[in-house]
Image 1 (tube, one colour):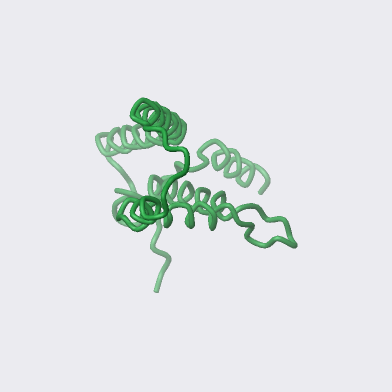
Image 2 (cartoon, rainbow, N blue to C red):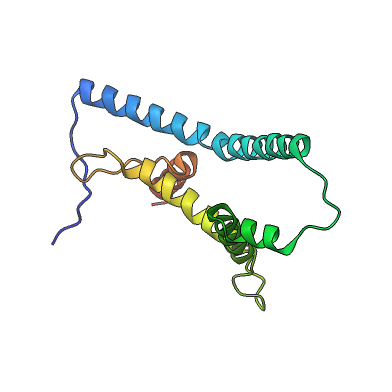
Length: 150
């Protein structure tokens, strides 16, 4: 079995189409850096709106009764909240505490980000060719150095 990637001769129209695709995916990768920031801001805004709505509807009870607490805890919303708290607790744990590798949530976010950029690198590449979108400047410099050092 031979190596699946190879150099091919392209017409001017095909070159233009590939450059347009590279530009579009480069823009996608740059704009996708804003998505986590915007998502976090929307999450914080929704938490604030939710807490303000609860504050305006809150009825004061000096000591909550046990059946009331149990009913809230065993409802579908209460079960979902408990599972969400468990997920957040698990994501906040260390990968390898003795080695100090970081939190699970950071590793999962990094893995998702890497998969997204890799997808942008290989999506619609056609017949075995490969577009370098993840680190275009680094790769150009690396290839130029490899050519000039021979």
